[in-house]
Length: 385
Image 1 (cartoon, rainbow, N blue to C red):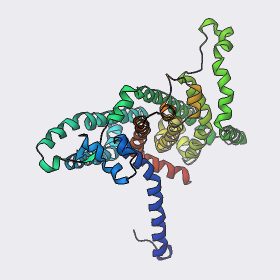
Image 2 (cartoon, rainbow, N blue to C red):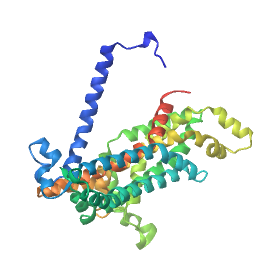
Image 3 (cartoon, rainbow, N blue to C red):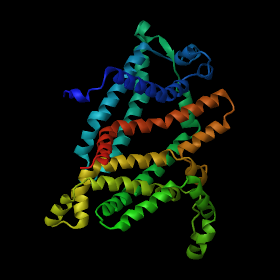
Image 4 (cartoon, rainbow, N blue to C red):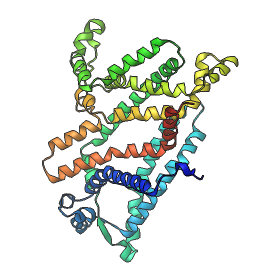
């Protein structure tokens, strides 16, 4: 499509904008790229003063741990195909096989199965195949880049980081489920309400959302610690202790995030014409049936976008989880902070870096899978229909 002459930007402005965007992308992606490279090197290479030694890892390669040209080509090809499959094929498979009315659960199950399949193929099946191929590849099978996964094995297997990963999944799944369930109902009701009371309720909710988390946690912490004594007159000796329980932290994170969720979903619902509700009512639907069978199918991009923000709040939370969860039920972000606090050797430092890199993988997976829904959801929330 040709841009009208009046709207065409001068070449200098386009070059300046492209230059700033490129610079921003480089500055934003460099830290993640660098710690990822460090996490696959021996400590001598990871903390070398020469950047080329960090990238190519001569000491790591000298210890027999490296990648050949064949490994790099095949590995990049598998990664490219994985991204292509996640972006183009997985959404169609989920929509085709998810039962009617269970699209969200279909996305969750599909994402977990896709991630599990990638881990099995890339880290379990592919390495022995490439080792055999390198033995017959001649110069193409000679290591050129030092690389080792022993730090990830130490973090996930020896140090039990998988337990923190499971705890993070429990907390984030609980927060997203409760936030979206309550938020969609409340957002729909407030969007269709003509009362001024609905507006002031949202304003009051945002005031609580604007409070620092430390203020809220300071109020919750004494109650959580003394919960057994507080609830004993009502429940007797079976009174539970809220401190350290993931379900109690889910309730706290939902209470913090719910105003933002309701605001976002309300704006999405307001962009859906009320004529759809009226047509459904004329056809014999109740209010809830109109919401469930007519409005929600149109709302999926907005729900997924809002769910992503709820996921990021719970997944990246440090203060609430670190103070209200005990060591056994700790999520990944506070656990990584513990790694850096107790480091004693350079090996411990590289393991801490490997743990930090590990938590980014689910985020990349979510963005790849839901990119279309996120873009359409943000656009729908920004433009009045």
